[in-house]
Image: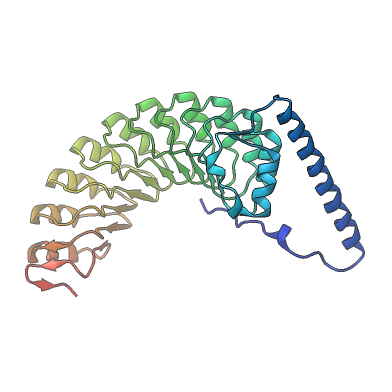
Length: 316
C-alpha cells in the first residue's frame, strides 16, 4: 500500500496576519508545558522514582527533536509515555530499535507517527500492543520477533502498510492464515523453510509478498505459492530449480521474481517459458545456453538481463 507523504506543515513558517499571534502564543504555551514536564521528570529521577539510564524520557525526546544528530535513540531500551507522545510528532522516520519493552499506552502514542516506525529490538509482543501498533499509518518494522502466536498475528494483520517480520524463521498454518489477511506489503524473508500448508495459507495474501529466505522449493510448495493471489511474489533466495518446480511456478498469475537464479538448464527454461502471469523477473541470470535463451525469448513477459552470457555470445 502506498504510504502517506510525510507531514511537514509544522516546519513551515507562520503566515502573516491576525492568526500569527495566536499561533505564536500556542507555541509558547506548548514549550512552557514541555519545560514543566521536563522539570517533573528530573525531580522524579532525582528521587529514584524512575531510572533514566536506559529510558527515553521527555528530556531525551526533546533533545532529539531539537537536534537528531545529538541523540541516538537506539541506545535506549524503554520509553516514557510523554516521550512517546512527543516523538510521534517527529516529521521524519522514527528509529527505536533499542527498545526491548513497550507498553500499550506508549504503543498507542507511537502509532500516531506517520512514517517508518522501526521497533526491531522488540522480541515479543502481546496482542494488545500488537493491536495498538497495527494502527500505525506507515511501514512497521518488527524484525526482532522470532515467533508469533495466532492472536498477535491476527492483530498485526490489521496493519495496512508495509509490515516487516524478517525475524520469523518458521510459520505454522494458523499464523500464516492470520498474516495472509494483511493488506499491505508483507516481508517474511527470515523463513528458510516452508511447508505446503503454511504456503497454501500465505498464497491468500493479496498484496506484495517477500519470501527471500527460501533457497529451495519442492513441487508441492511451489504449486501452493503459484496460487498467490497478490500482485507480486518475490523468491529471490531460490538459487536452483528443477523442471517440475519451474512448471508449477509458471502458473503464477501475478508478477514473480526469481532473482537468485544465475543459470538455467534448458528443460527448466522451457518450463518457465510457459509462464502465464503478468511478469517474470530473472534478473540474476549470468549464463544461458542458446537453447535456453530461445525458450525464454519466446515469452515477452519474461525479463532477464542483457549481460547474460549465451555460450560465448552476449545477448543483446
